[in-house]
Figure 1 (cartoon, one colour):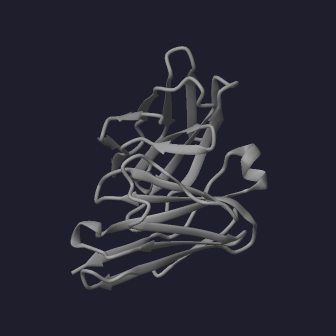
Figure 2 (cartoon, chains in turn purple, green):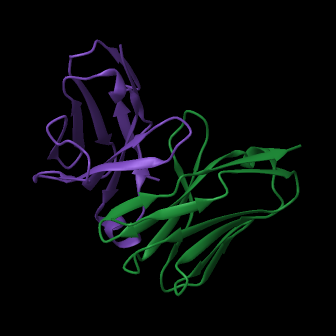
Length: 118
Length: 110
């Protein structure tokens, strides 16, 4: 299957700082990328959907000014957690879908990024 | 948005037995239902999927059934093996978005 790479896999930051997480589709063009948050032993919670070249669509309850999403190219989407606080500590996973996936529905996931805010 | 419920949250079976995980969804507009397997610390991997125009799909030891009227779908794993131990997530696609169930931790005892 297609490869989606996420970076960094681990990040520790101080409270009040901002952290950027990158999600790249390595061998296909991702027309749509999804960002999920996963708490320990819990499901993936959809945060936002981003389409290349347009603003992200955020799910209810997700602060768009806190979780900035940019999908500047067909192979890269970024999630920036601004002014991070300890409660933002979580596992963030991106997933991507290409044109073929819009028909088949298949999603490809990144490895995830574990954020710890001290 | 779509609401996907998954049961049970944990499932322990003996090697060789079958395992069944069930999910329900709320929005009749959802038309695609994938199942993902996630091993500890790793990314979710698609194991099987089913579309709303199909009632059942099988791939070796794994099968998925869908009841559109009742809005529920199930994952069936036969002849379970220790390497099947993982967390399994169901999902439903509503228009352009995917919503996940809460996950089932499957433990296959040797």
